[in-house]
Length: 161
Image 1 (cartoon, rainbow, N blue to C red):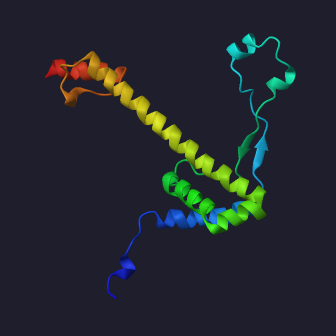
Image 2: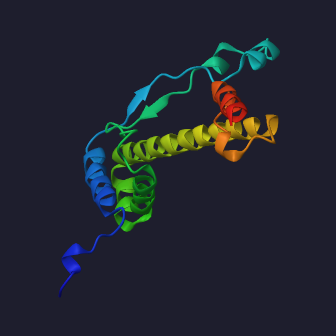
Image 3: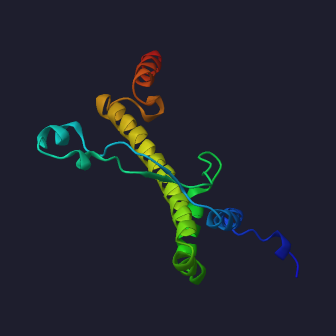
């Protein structure tokens, strides 16, 4: 069987890494930290008759194994957490080891938060580029650079050519 040793399945290393992390996560509890009050200032002003119990901070649940923001393949590892949680092994752990399962869930949520933050950042960068395009529609695409100082540099370069 020639060539099969060179066969690479995309994401396989990340999936295997996540399965190893799941085994570690199942052996401990998530870290629970007191959170901030979830009510906005406006809600607090509008609920003058609200009791002190309404202002209890919601706890933040963190996994005992942190995600690596830079090096983890968050999409693959999040999907592996979901696949595992819905598998027979995951459902069994949910019933017999709810604390460990909660730790795996917290870890999956951490991967999801990183992906959402990344998507928000990409949307913000796209909006900055669109604003520069709307402000200077006749500026050639090769001269359009992000917002702020990039617009100024693009105009200077355009005027020189």
